[in-house]
Length: 214
Image 1 (tube, rainbow, N blue to C red):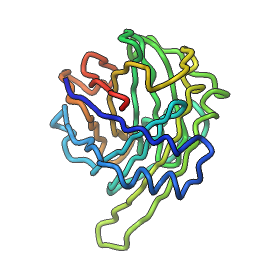
Image 2: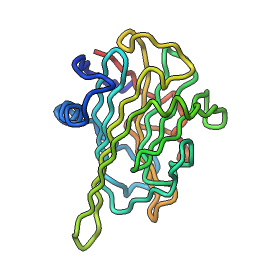
Image 3: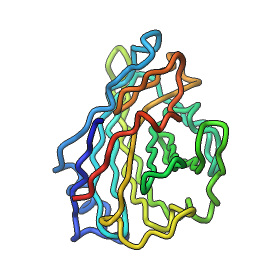
Image 4: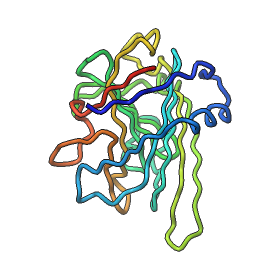
């Protein structure tokens, strides 16, 4: 099973300034979201992420380079996976049910909880509102347009509405990270932990990796 070591950054908290948070995450090793489980969609963007935690929050930053971007969905729990989208799935305590947090390149979030793709409960918008999001997009002037965008997230314990988490460092978790864009000119489906399935489907927790909160 693939493993992810999530370092502790105790000096950061939910109210930390964006410059200090970004600087701390930029200094961490990055993980590639580079597995292409479905070769017909193999051509895709370059995607990495960095992740850390303290007792109360998860800090997550995505780094994306792609030729096409879209952000049509602007309301909480809209179908953001149709846009330029990054995703984070997490299951706690060995449970079958897991959370999916999906964000388009502007930071619009869709989040749910359940045991599979077709058995999900959307999280209340009030809980999702606790997630802090900062998006930065840059467009190059090269002959082939290439967009670079970054998304920094602070996900507090309160966002995990189906659990009462008191200290993230004491939790056991399994995770996976994704990049997709269902309605882009060139749809793509990339994963951090490789998936074995006949068609695109990120809702397969048997392929989640182990997360260790150091």
